Length: 371
Image (cartoon, rainbow, N blue to C red; front, top):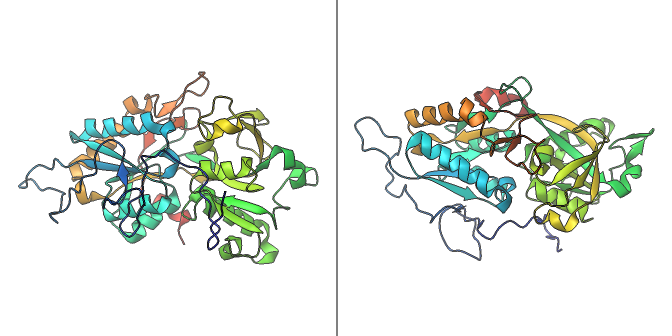
């Protein structure tokens, strides 16, 4: 697998062919279409060509244009087809308008789409990506967030991991315990520099751990001095693939995005020393690596990421209707969104044991990730 000589970025997680990034100023050899992302539920339609603001007042004609829902690369694979379709169905139920799901292969495309209003809703963002979008357009705001196991914000967290392959794990022990002491000089894989749990939190942890080195984020980038090589997988799945294929010796990714493909083998979930293995029935590209094991050597809790909206094409009543439906008991019981991981073969967006239902929060909840 070739490495880009300028940026040392490698996109190892190849998503379905329907996911063709087409952001303005960003082209694809497979398509000359102008929309910023490609929808997988129908043809792309530019519904804003007239330049007329689409948030209708009582005296304006009812808005019947589609509501575009953009997804990060992590949820853009075929594995999440049913989940995306279900979210689209719920948005249609709340608003009475058609919903289009837009898949991406790059964080930046999703962020720019919600900032520009090419997308009206961005699902399952991370805090950093949301903040980047809001910095581009202050009108972008939080729609709702997946809550904790009780549907509240009290423990609404997921986990940023730094992992190594089980076969190499003893190299990363210090004083008999797993540690990031020995990651210096190794080959490192991150997700994207717009990823909260796949870049911002892990790099902050590394900088804090090696405090005496006075590291900066730049030191941890491809042209930095800390690692011998640095890769970006462009998704959490891609970063994990970099690890299990040996492209990288250390990799950052999160628990939620790997949940469909892995199972706990040893230890306690989301703790240092936990050993996970690729499921025997894991979807591609993990199917080629069934049984491979990796160890968590650093684990940091992260605030659950926001689902965001741009009001350009949504009325206040529609925003409220979407919030009301998605924070309802009906959606909390929706097994495509919140599934019981103890049931064999069950799969959804979030495990009920850690996240059960959506909750409302404000922009300021994400202040710890600013600055």
